[in-house]
Image 1 (tube, helix red, strand yellow):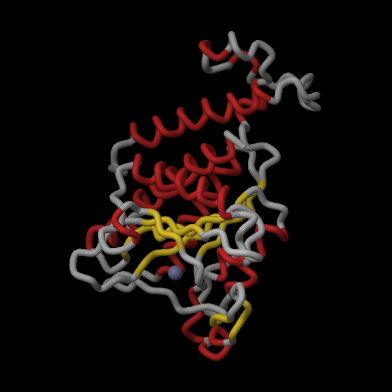
Image 2 (cartoon, helix red, strand yellow; image 1 turned 60 degrees about the vertical axis):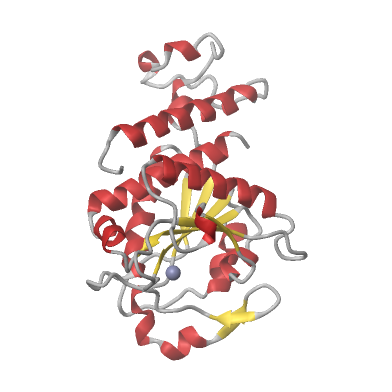
Amino acid sequence: MLSDARTPLGLGLAAALVAIGGIAARAAAPDPSADSAGPAAGARPAVALSAATPARDPEVAARPLAGRVVVLDPGHQLGNRHFPRQIARPVPAGGFTKPCNTTGTATDGGYPEATLTWSVARRLERRLEALGARVVLTRTSNRDDRWGPCVDARGRAGAAAHADLTVSLHGDGSTQRGAHGFHVIVPPSRAPWTDDIAAPSRRLGLDLRAALHGAGLPYATYVAGGDGLDVRSDLATLNLSDVPVAMVELGNMRSRVDAARMTDARGRDGYAAALAAGIRTFLGRR
Ligand SMILES: [Zn+2]
């Protein structure tokens, strides 16, 4: 479970080993930072790795995502409900149109989806930046007097930022009895929209699913066939992406169990830790 601090730590270590292995495989290429021995030179953590990577730069090891760019898309915007005309405007969605955005859902206690996705995105941003990545958010505020951006802009954000990947964050709103758990949504291969990104997007989705499940989160009980992975061609955020993309429905906000995690800062941090581990795994083997 998320309250078990050992689980995310274990995941993080596994992801670190994968990432370090990926860097080591490219060690033959000139490394511009190779001669910049950092102050942490004496703090090389993993003795077992030194045989395979004798010339590892501890600065690089400490920032395994240096040079990587990640777009995070916190779903919706807090003020969307005040701008019904603006968010209803049809926008391109990948061969069809969809409304610019929606209000999003909320817990029964009134905690909004926009705030959940914003909080998890900011926590995930901090974790990824600490690993050396550059993070670009599709919105820069969570405010009741703002709306958007539209789903087409969210979908195109990855290419605009020259990102390695996009992760879109949402919370679901099923009123089905007992419905709870997370699921990850990836695009199918559909020319000319997603045939170029379907395969790596699926790998990203599988890595995120494994990380979330490994952190103790259950697969959604009410959607996606019960295995936590859905494939959908109707989402502009996925269809318009030109970089690997996955959407994560962190849980069902109408579930009392999921809502308890979502409204707790430690719960949201648990989501962020697991997502960071999944992103590291994905980037580590590219
Ligand atoms: Zn949503």
